[in-house]
Length: 533
Image (cartoon, rainbow, N blue to C red):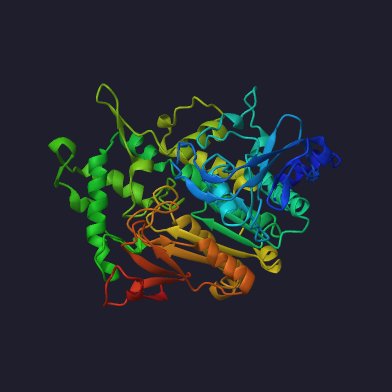
């Protein structure tokens, strides 16, 4: 655990509190159990404020749309009991932990689900899916907003960083939800959890890595996809495209950016032996955006736009990623073949003036946690100031939320298994960050073979952030993790498919990648083999 976090926890450590089951009215029977509050012990440093039980009828469950997702309804959900526990650390935070317990069909497993962007958990579809699949599900809001793009909680009324809530969001609340989830499940069913799993992507992926690094005994298996590891670097680095456009005073239109994307795919797609609209290894793509200068593109409404040298220079910098004044790389750039929209998309106001609004996660991080001014105009950041902010982020927050520690010795000794897939066309979190972290783990822990004993990484060609895109994404990564944890069958490959099922591929455990055999239907998994990168 990081020193900063240890100090906060030590300062906020009151005695434990137990809330008796009799604190609530008698519950309602579901299956072989009764939906009623159970005794809950507060984790060290916390105090329980309330415990509430609610019977959920199951059936077809629908979910509201969020700023980042529109979950589909889930059918055939069994009736379940949801226990909601609220706790506090200093009296000023109020953290909610939800534990969803199937009334019948519990497999003995616990599944904790992670959040996205600045939301610490998900009380919707992932939690309900866990119940449907026979897990006791658990999630937490860390005491912060459920809106994944809201960071208003990050500062106190006097403009200081809210260290309590930052600590909750970074690491503490996920750990506490694991402790509470196991205890509540044991009290509810009368027997302990057999196996515990983490399931998250993006911020949820970062949370999973934080658990493996700082609390290695919380989960037997961690599924952490497209993880926002090295948060303090990633959260500033993804502001780079906006910084480039504002400093160069040039804003390529979305039509032009899409033209560069298509040109890169056309140039580098055949390198993997099959032309399928996917760049398998974007890091090997040497396409030069200057070759598109002078090309005329047909845009929406029939408008024609000619690509300029200024367009090409912006795209070159976006693909290269942020650098310091000496040209040294600070972080990975947007992979060639990925969609520019989120990181480099432009907007045009009513006067026809273009601007780059920037990636919301990056702009919020800089405004709230670095500038500490919610109204700070990120469009004013110079190249020099960008580098200063990058280093400030690492200096002030790496011990808090960096999630960059390559020493996973404790997790390995605890018998934990970590499984991750990353899309090579990830348009939000460049996959280079995860690859760099994995390489540091290998250097620290004895090479790829030893690391693969407990930590397996799978690259998904053409897949976007957490799924989608032109490439096949894993169809049951959690099932593969369960099989590894409970039966010792380490996955050499992960079966993958596109959403419509038109393409399949078996993804290979890093450092191997799937390569076309040179014959057979390129849309079918059997036409690929695993080979070293």
